[in-house]
Image (cartoon, rainbow, N blue to C red):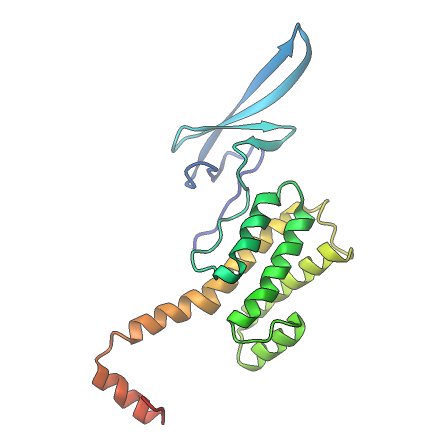
Length: 209
């Protein structure tokens, strides 16, 4: 998966909120005034790829009302898709609320991965015992720790560091890619082997066909 670069004020390249393409962005100023007073500045940003314009006020995206978070992974299970999309919709306005939702998504993902889903730490310990790669464990723990800080204030202030909440979406997509997408892809390729070859492999490994 290519790295998602979220829209950011005055950045000259990022993934467009309209077309989703990583493209050059051109910035300009737009001014409105009422009888020459109370002038309010609005920044405009035009995508070089699709030509559409987004509008920013006080350094925040206001039009379109799109999320600045990475899209949900195409293999995101239905059991957690609602939480992920809701988190995407609110992350700009409330990083803490988005982080809390993604922590819930992680907990609900555990039964999909064969665990109980009652305690994230216990489920992680079980996954590690089954050979969970270190990088994936780190991604899980990142989501767990940041999510916990969203619910119970700790050392991470999500209001001061909203980019930490943004990173949660990348971590979750990484987990889904490793735990769901890749195994399904390998299984699909394996099923393309001749049946006689698969039967021989199963016999070798002592499996029942």
